[in-house]
Image 1: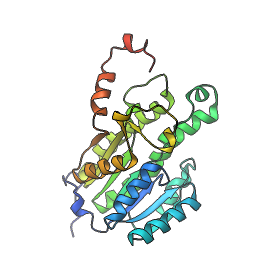
Image 2 (image 1 turned 90 degrees about the vertical axis):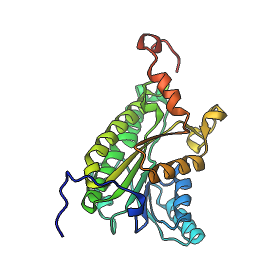
Image 3 (image 1 turned 30 degrees about the vertical axis):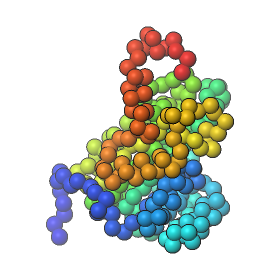
Length: 261
């Protein structure tokens, strides 16, 4: 069979996803759990990757029994540097769908003065994600189809004093995904950038979140799956965040720098 040239344009579609095996990175997060159940309900076999292997074993067992699918845990620490790629490359087969939820929010005041806190924010939200996605991208490139969906954040659309370490990491991640999408398009691999706004999760517990613009993990998971099926490039979830961030991005800098956001 003749090898397809890189310049040939192939439109990826979920009808090409025949093996139905998905890799979920950051699988213990509330959004990832909701996504895992949504995929398992549709017969997808799952690899659940994260740091807490004990929790992942229990989660895998529950998904397997409840939905009658194969679910396996994978110990993956996004602060592990070169070890991340080795773990990904050791997988038995190539997951045709990867959804990455990895990320942390930590105290911004502490990040300003504490090296370790700032390093955790930047490494987990940016460096670690990229080191995990890069080998997946090369594996899917050889296959000629597949989907990579990664959670960034509306916080990356404009730096704000309340979370600019986190926001800057997400801004870099958004730029990386844009370039990756451009790179993989001609190989038939689709890349989706996911930008959640406020979400009711354990990470935001105790925060005074405005109800009308705050989503549930289950709603976010449904939006992600809909975007995968429709081959969207970038989604905001909930949908109104696209317009909220459009307004915030267009505030003149001489005004914006005076705001308490």
